[in-house]
Amino acid sequence: MKLDSIATLVLDAVERIDPETRYEEKAHGTPRIPSTNELLRGTLGGRETEYPRSRDRCDVAFEVDGLRIWLEAKHSWTWSTYTQPACRNGAYTKHLFGTDAASSLHDAGTKLPRLIGQPGVDAIAMLVIALGSTSLPHSVDDIRSLARSAQLDVAPWKQFDRPERASRVLGYETIRVRPYLWIRPAASVATKRAARA
Image (cartoon, rainbow, N blue to C red):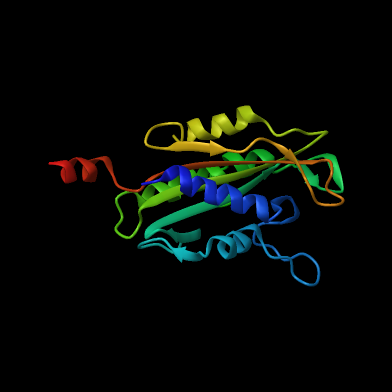
């Protein structure tokens, strides 16, 4: 399985959608602004999909060369609004490390592992879009801590990311964007051993 090429596809999609201008799954203003997940689904040709035997939904399920990838995506922003990039986001820690469904840790540590060994799933992936500002940079240490807490830093998980960049969107010049992606085959270690035997 070409995890590198899948990762490139996902990270390129993030670059095209200007995630710093989106609010996950929320409508703001008129006309409605599409969410990050909606734009990722459109860019990757994916859909929102129910988890097996659960009401939980996966943000983006898509196919590449016949491989079925299930991707969870979260924002992690340090600032409260782009118009006030020096004001702290009070929910920053909760969105990264909380135990509820709105957190990156929940998706990476609880939801995605349920897909390991599931038929119809070839790879699983966790995308965290780190959004900082010139006044409040995003912490690389917090991203490492998330990876440790969710065991994304353990094989067969593989990490990919892009360098931090300034927003290219007018009015967002002080905002910094850096996507992090972890991806792994969905086959369990036991399934792989049985296939080799």
